[in-house]
Length: 200
Image (cartoon, rainbow, N blue to C red; front, side, top):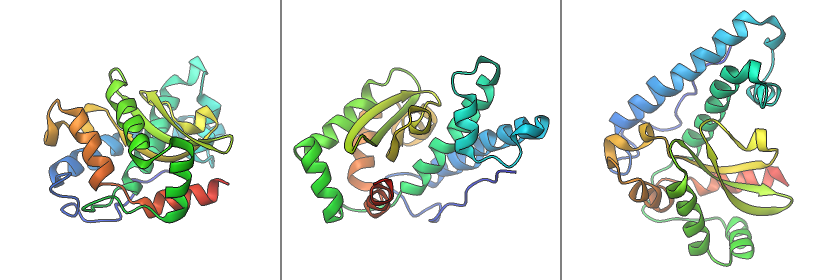
C-alpha cells in the first residue's frame, strides 16, 4: 500500500514564501486524498498489487477503463516530486553542472525562468509546469490535470503545481507571483541537479 510522503522540512520552514496553512491543506488533505484513492483502486484489483506508482501511471494512461486510476496515480507522482523539490532560499543557488546545462539549452537562466513561468501561467485551468530532459535536452513542458513526464516518457526534473490549491491561500489569484517566487525562493536546486545526473 502507498503511504503519504513525509515532508523533508518542517511546516513552518518555507515561510513566508509558502505558509504552513498551505502545506497543511496541500500535503495533508489533497495529496493524502490521492494516496487513499490509489490504495482503494489497488485493493479492488489484485493485478495492481506490488506495482510502483510509475507502473500504475503507464498501465492506466490512455486507458478509458482506468482513467480514475491514472488521475490519482498521476497526482501522487506529481505531488511527491513537487514536495521533494521544495526548499527555502533567498536566491537561486544552482550547482555548476545544472547551471551549465540550463545555459546551454535555454541560453541563460533568465530565459529558462521565463519559459518555465510562462508555461505555468498559460496552463489553462489545473495542471503542472515541468522541466524535463527529453532526448538529452532540457525542455519546459506544461501538462493538464494529472498528466506527467512518466506518461510522456521523458525524465522529469522539476515541477511546480499550478492547481489553485497549491497557492490560493497565500497568493489568491496571483499565479504569476507564485511561479516567480517558486523559482526564486522555493527550489532545492541540488535535488534537481541530482535528478539530472541520474537521468543521463
